[in-house]
Length: 101
Image (tube, rainbow, N blue to C red; front, side):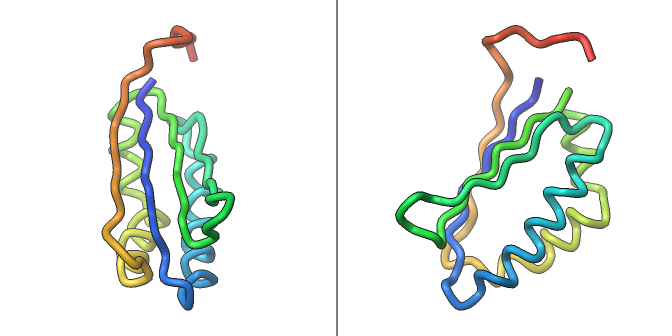
């Protein structure tokens, strides 16, 4: 599996617009054949901080996600809504072992 995490801090006055683009992107990503999971998490005490947890079968599936229209809309609109630059990281699964898909 290939795991992508993203930390985001949204401007308070841009929260609704951020959620519109983010929830659309996440719900459509979950329909992609290579996407196993796409969680949008909100910080418990700071409602303007978010964390994405995305799981793909392989790096190529994440790359395919980045070529979709819904991701490109998100990518093009969300940076202006953030209070600071987003922070992403990429991981390879260790445990539990990957399953056959």
